[in-house]
Structure formats: structure tokens, C-alpha cells
Image 1 (tube, helix red, strand yellow):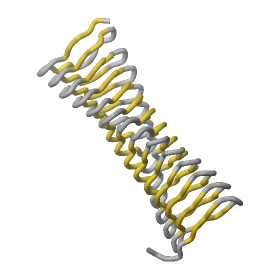
Image 2 (cartoon, rainbow, N blue to C red):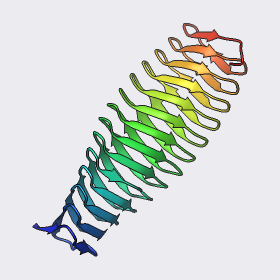
Image 3 (tube, rainbow, N blue to C red):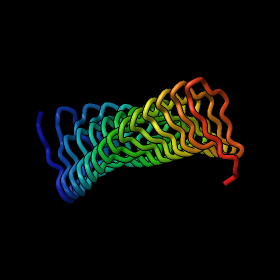
Length: 252
């Protein structure tokens, strides 16, 4: 496969199949087309659209991808790399060490957020499969979904219509807001605050909920699960033998 350098000041309108492109500082690729491959986007390099069948292997420190569209694929976003929008059918494989994805939109998918990688917004049909190893998702919004929050992974806010499927050992969800849902808190998983209208379906053995506030609901606390504080107006529906619920009857 022929390698083509897109260097400072060059603007490539579209890639050609059978070529691999390297986008250097100041270089720009408008469209990665079907069969087009960008091996690396370096600091100061920019790719505007990764279309169906287009591939970007690596986005490094200071490199930017503006849109990953249906069928487009970005392999790895490294320290300082950025992807601004993953749209319907677009895929980002892994967000590592300081890499950032700003928006995962309807049908967009991020497979793994690891090692200090960050996703700012997951909404309306967007999916993040795994958040782990110091990866952070800041907001899961209407129709957005995080499948697994694994050791070292953090989801900061699950907002109205957002869903977190599983919080595993060492994973943490910090706030479940009105209309947000956490399905399962497994052994070693932690949810810090369930706020008015937030819901956690199941707290499994070893899972912990720290605060259920007024209007927050916990569906079932299984044997070995723990809810540390249920505040005035918070609800725990089912408490199984061997689980622990500590109530604080105040409105603060």
C-alpha cells in the first residue's frame, strides 16, 4: 500500500483506495472515503469526515477528527487526540490516555474508554461498551447507554433517558439524575448519589449505593448488597436477607 504524506498547508479533498495517508501538523483531509485509510493523524493534523468504509488507525496528541459517520472507523485515540462527533454507525475502537471524544450520537459506538480517556457526552442512541482503567464518561443523556463501568472507570452523571447497564468491581457512577437508570450494581461497584427521579434496579452482593435522596428509587437490594443512606423521600422497594440498608430520615 502506497503511503502519502499530507503536510502543513496541504488540503486533501478525499482519500483514494489502496493508499495510506499520514496527516502531519497543519495537514488536512476533508473526507476519508470508502476504502481510504489514514494511518496516523499527528499534532495539528485534521480529518473532517470519516465516511462509510473509511478508516483512521490512530489519532495522536493534537490530532483532530471532526465527524465519524455511518460505517466510518477510528481505531485508537491517543493522549491529546480528539474526536468531536461519532454519528450513526460510526465506531471508535479505543480512547486512551488523555484522548477525548466529545459526542457519541445516535448509533455511534465507542468500544473502550481506558487509561484516562474521556467521553464528554453520550446521547440519543449512542453506546459506550466499556469504561475502565481511569476512563471517564461525563454525561449519559437521553437514549445514551454505557454497557459496563469496570475497575477504575467513572460515569459522572446519568441524566434523563440515560442508562448504565452494569457497574462492576471498582467501577463508579457518581450521580443518577431524574430519569436516569442504573440497571445493576455488582460486587465492588459503587453508585454515589441517586437523586430525585433517578433509579437503580438491582444492587447485587457486594454492590454499594451511598445515598438515595428524595425521589430516588432502588428496586432490589440482594443478599450482600448495601445501601448506606436513604434520605427522606428515598425508596428501597425490596431488601433481601443478608443485605444492609441504613436510613437517615432527614431532608438534607
